[in-house]
Image (tube, rainbow, N blue to C red):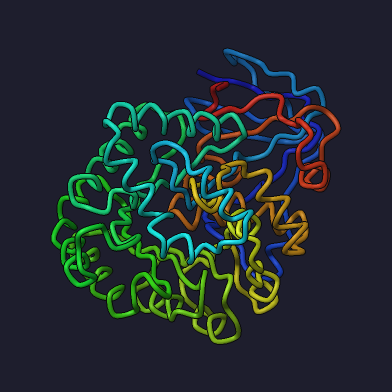
Length: 406
């Protein structure tokens, strides 16, 4: 099936093959072609060009873009979208002044989600989670990392992983799975008992998961706990990712770099030591501005990371307690409005670099021949500055995943 997109006003996110991430000054560069066309063949980008190059012939379908912008679909490298029910009661607690830590200390937060998930059938959990996946796809996201972590006992963690596996099988989005058994200590366990339980089920989790993650934070899991769990994950064939430095300077960034984590995520409480630890590493610093926005805490210093020559990714952290949205267009806008990234920097952070942070930038995140044709076609008149500026005005004409409209 060959589909030709013609009359593209601007084709944005163009990159040659082999570029898997952007860093430093490259973050402000976006390859574009004006008055362009793009050919999709069997779900992949087969070719593209400008007005000086003849349009391909013998195609099955033609999409007249009418001058709209065509760009890669968003990549969201950090979500918790397999959960049950709703935590709107905690929304009121936050309005009344309770902090994230205070809600957790009262047995709410992650433990509340674990209780709800335990009572929910696997079929119902799949149904609720697919609604969120479909919502994200409609908003332009083509690649999604999904974590476990609301089971907090072996049976329910494996239930979550099975649900993610079902999502992976039926969704047109590219899905990657992370085992986050160490999200909080499950009810009925001592801290040490729970760390051992997570390590024991690692081989079973590895049947479904691509990555292993730990909430390496004050009041949750220590650097020593994290090291033990990551080592067990590596033995099972799972590459580390890490929650780090959201609530305090935890040592999580340095631990992630030591274990060659694919990404270290949150980073609200970081400074020069964390930047220095990441310099020269393969680990992608990933900021979650939706969480900082919802919790009313300071954003991480993403501009300092870029100024130091590092790349950054942005992800949604879509979850029921601290970031109840998977709208990556809004994350792009928060990157500009609150973190003072340029629209180009934030664009690269929600496409190529977020793809890199979930290990899929070889197949997604840019307009590159051979990559998945995961595309957003805008209405005429939109630019890479206007999209985050008018951050809730409808801009999408059609989303295409593997070249097919969704």
